[in-house]
Length: 159
Image (cartoon, rainbow, N blue to C red; front, top):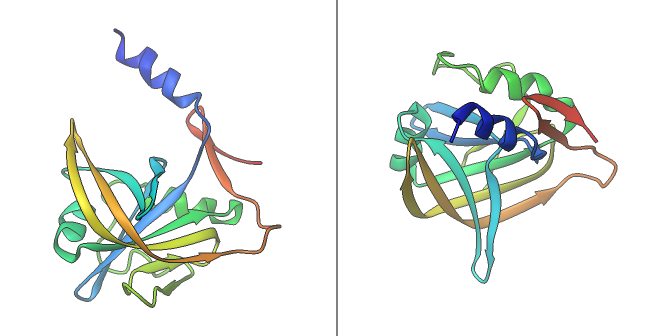
């Protein structure tokens, strides 16, 4: 199997764009992901996939809580910034409008169609990544007219 063919095939699956965040001590850690899925309604569980070597994974492994912001189209600059490798740990959310989740203290992006606060329920190693399964502790929804940001064929788009 050709890995590049697989990458192109996976890129044809249009997906939402999310930011996953956690607060470790005085520092926010956040990454852009397109691997988010609903797992269960009883209990309410979701999953995200994060790179096992990422600073974010080290932080969330310690905190065991995280926020998930399902991004609105207006959050394209934040999605791009938080997908940039090597960005500084300190103040990486300084130019990203956000609020603190009441249950976890994680940063939840203002330009979102929905936000969730989660507690890690399980972790599953999977190749270069770790599948984080989180129990949803809280949900907020934006008004219905707010459009989501999507990812398709390697680029951001709007519905």
